[in-house]
Length: 369
Ligand code: GLA
Image 1 (cartoon, rainbow, N blue to C red):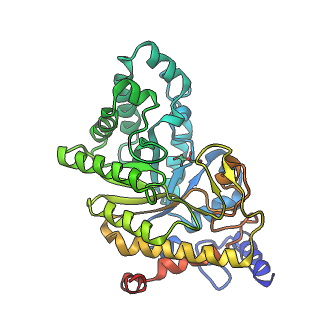
Image 2 (cartoon, protein in one colour):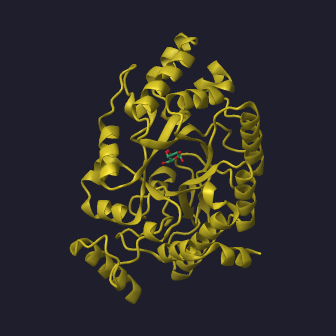
Image 3 (cartoon, rainbow, N blue to C red):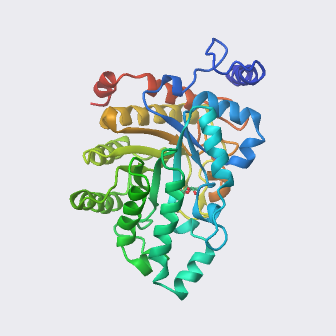
């Protein structure tokens, strides 16, 4: 109880004193000020613009901006072959104003492919590859030097187990080579952008992880311009640290940038589908919150231990508070996956994450051995 009151008081001070850039005894420390690598959170631009408290917290804790959905194909090209860059332009302006890196999420993803693209591609299969090239050239080209890195392909592998996700128009019409083509086009449009393959469950589903590694190593051998691997990292409390350390370390052995791109940690579980939440815990206890704090701490320590500093592209939360988390809406279940609670006060998870950031690499190593 005392903690809750203290946390609320912190947030009150944070917002009301408008001293967000000044760390003091009354403010919780800024996460990014304590981090050796960039930190970000997914943001929905429109509601964010109306929410001063959220913006202040985002500016205080993060130095990287990822659009939750505003940069996806169905948002920037909702109607046939006509770009609408208005929100992306505003995002770039906001990020410049606050000295933040913009991360582009994402170029090609089956779930955000607009219906008109599906229809047109089915009617005229030859059109799809040239559309993809023009889309990437124009989009990446327009923000050359302003968007630091891109998730070029999001979720190109099967939900579970080995193999590619075949049930998409991209795969069905162009074949598996659509993935490397997307990387080539993006690289041609902005040779300096950091280009990621991004997927979920690769930290724990070893068959899926191995398919990804085979693809990435093949790309590297053939000079396909991939420069990073994004682990979405939507994890559960019971995913063993050892598996996460193993997959991150193996991925880092490619020499590529490693991004924990959509981090959250749930207590319950789900079947990976919309509405597929499996509610095991209906309430959260202090003990669970402390265990979650430890899990966040462990994860940062693992990242720092197994990913060499020059390959640490950063950590991005998929929303940083339990009020706005996608988990509740998407899986239709109650959960508490983030570092801030429903009242926008820092949870034990916040302090666990911070502790992980502050641990130096040498002691992280000895603690994990
Ligand atoms: C995936 C996608 C994200 C987002 C989340 C759910 O992880 O990569 O863009 O849509 O699902 O919100």
